[in-house]
Image (cartoon, rainbow, N blue to C red; front, side, top):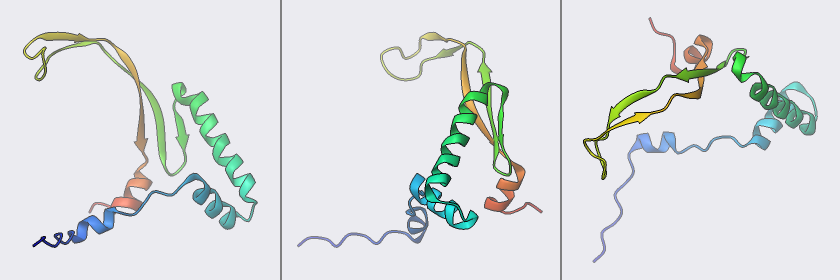
Length: 114
């Protein structure tokens, strides 16, 4: 006799919502601002292109956050797993892209702290 699958917790249902696609975002934007969907897609593409070109100087999306380029120094670390476990290796310096959310975005999503 086969067992019935266990019911999923209620919290899992909340996180199961799918992210909006580019066309859904463009359609919503076009409807709110009363422009064509093609123009809304062009705005999104231009925003992405501008952020790529200006990331090294930091790029701000007002009300959302700031994209910044951060330089990480080289460092030494001890490998914990795998065939090199226990050995010290040197991790080279590198540049990484980070996104820092604006306070307004944090408050709107998480709620303000009191």
